[in-house]
Length: 245
Image 1 (cartoon, rainbow, N blue to C red):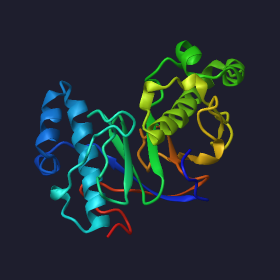
Image 2: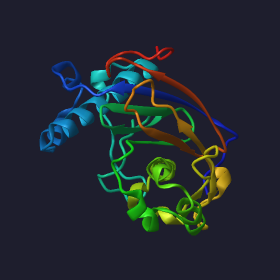
Image 3: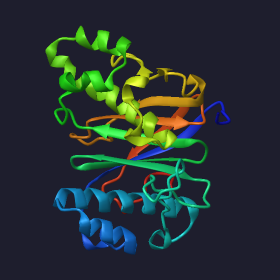
Image 4: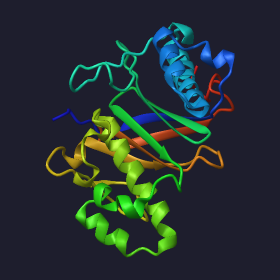
């Protein structure tokens, strides 16, 4: 079990997606290979913008040139090369997510963050309910009017994926093992099928960063029983958010 601290402070930064030479210039050789391997222009743009945003913010927080930062993708669970990116040797931990034309970054000095954003209409939650929802959640979900199912499904999904990203598991563990509060209530972890204690996590919903298509988003921090969020938006992945320097 992780050592639990009372609360964690998290900086959340939203940026529009953009793919231009100055943004791509922050990619290292391995990241450029990954960028090139992505077939869809939108996927390449979101990847480049996410990495540039992370390096821009972390560079200002650490005092290191953004172009010099290298992320380690060693999986913290199995040691494979497919883990979430992290800045090795730094006290800062971060998580990235994107949806449509926005990318979001969460950074913590203590605890392990996981952030997720979803655009309504992207998934068929009525069909996915059996794979995503616990029994208690499914009962609540089935009682919602049809017009609320997509929004509610996004709330459940983002809260759960944020938790899974915070532990490093990603989507390798079943979402239905996790029970969170209903979409009309404040975000909270209710139960995780004996894997984790509720007190190990801070969980909160996020705004859309001022972007019209920002969608539904959530942030979880593993190793903290609560999370205090400072949320801001920038106009470009290379811009400095307030207080980051």
